Length: 536
Image (cartoon, rainbow, N blue to C red):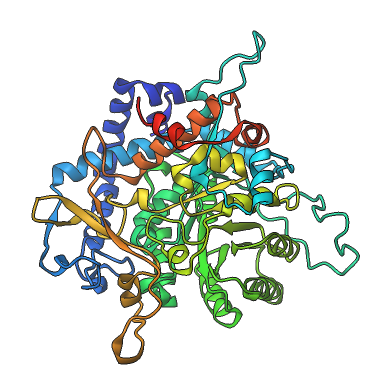
């Protein structure tokens, strides 16, 4: 079966004839050895209208609290077998592309490198905003094209950028990034450099409506993206979150990507995929340690301490988790912490052993925390301010995936993504969709603090009221128009196209070099400039 992916990356990526031949050959093998039947059976289980039938996945659940007065009367419809087969064939194609030997070579090479810390940059946009007390939101920013280099600089080709993987190492450097006047003479906690592993720029967010199924988690992890195992909704139950991990591992073992590989190659890939799964934890140390211990036993080695509210709890929980790691003689774990709200918090978290930081409150497609609390969505200024002060990756959420170039130029190494992946067969509900009065097929997509999600977690207040609503629920239609396939991998490819284009117009070949160069190309755009960018 080794010959299945013998075409070069460029041939497989650009030649329909070669790609169709490879997919047909692999499809036949998957039919013959039972893998395809297993995949369809797992999809069938997820395509349930009741949560308990989809366990440990979420299924296509309607709670009656969808901000939609017609929700309870909606019909349900299963995609045709022909449609599902065509979608799975697209899923196979992208998995093969994302795990092509030439791309894996780039992944493993980048994994041997340390993360390249971002240098501090002065820019009038941020300087003036600080002086005038203004907030910069990511939609304010664009880049100018640059990098012609006269006759000495050849163009960067898109296919080569896709092949290079858009990877960033997550392994910390040994350098000390504390400011000169810091309390560096104090006793530091045990140093954790993190794992030798590069990841994609795109990070799957902690939203159960997207990553609340084992197929979605496995698909993103196999794409070399970090992806969060959610703890909201039904997954507030530790056992269900743990079982979701186990089921995701089953998908790894059954992956079509492993066909034709020897045992060492299989084990290396599975290990990389497993380390892309992020177990989401509470910011409360007592609760977090219980959940972390259960997830570790299930094979999770990467964790995210998640708290949108400002407090010292994330720092205390980080320290407690490092103590637990030492007491139990765990193999080294990676710990990501957020949401960071100020510069000193970011510095303190790195000093205490964080391997990456999360930023962004209330600016996502379904999160209304910023709106409810009257907050500015100003994470770009905070991330910019931490350049040169910390030496670990920064992951941003809250509108960043609508402004990829500016987000990376500001300093984002990871860009959290959720809603763009909704409405696909990998997400909860599988190939079962709701149908409205116009015949449109869709799935619901609610914020983590929406009524819908709180009902799933059984979080009622007095008199069965639902309190602290900070999220909306909307519809996400089935992606099938204009040559679109209903797999989240085509969405991921579209996002990759945007990142690739950003690198092309800065004439850079790596994400790290883009982040060093692009800050000088940042501009704050006018209203008319925004309008003109959408006219062509």
